[in-house]
Amino acid sequence: MIRRPHKRRARAGGRPAALGAILLLLAGACSTARQQAELSGGPGSGAGPGLAATPALAEAWAAPSIRPIGQPKAVGDHLVVYGTEGHDLYLYGVDPADGSVRWRREASPSAVAPGMAVEPRILAGRVAYFRPDPSATLAARLVVADPATGADLVVSGPSVFLSHPGPCADGADVCVRVARPGQPSATLRFSVEGAGPAPDQVAPPPGPAPWARA
Image (cartoon, rainbow, N blue to C red; front, side, top):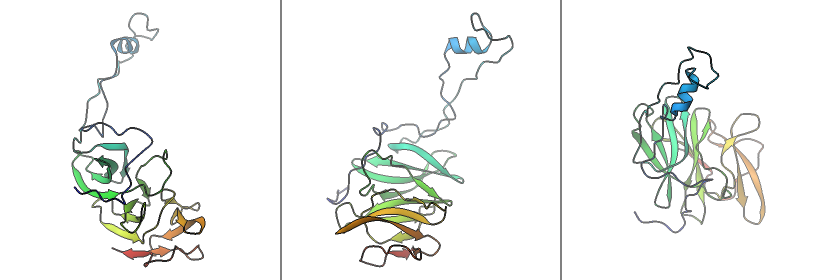
């Protein structure tokens, strides 16, 4: 893969998990013999007789092809999770039944401050994320996608984003903070259903059409 110079290295609040890390566990075999003895009312436990020990827990599945960042998020019958390949960030759609990768898309943190957790944002049953754009350093496009297929539902024009996308305070639309050259940064509000800036809000920075339906 050829790494483009404008792309920002993936980062998150913690160190990425090792290759082959398990994304989903029904449980792990973590009970010690002493804990089981205590739960079953064994010597020195202080527990009454007949209290059943916690059953051994088993791994449900693993996704060895993903080097995940953070925990997967459930969206209906689907899972989405960020992961890295080298220094590049990707968003994956994962089948919760067996851990298979259904789709993969390039992603970017844009200019969100280091230390802020990079995690999928779920809005009204859709997944919102930033996709790197070659127009400028740290530039990205805000994408709202179908979690089942990864297909774009709405794509913004390029901007430099300072916050992760999230629901607006009233629970409607998508709000995100962007940098504006020569001006203070601004929080913009976008309507997913209307495929563009919501009425009576700050206009997006000049440039190509801010939104396009996929």
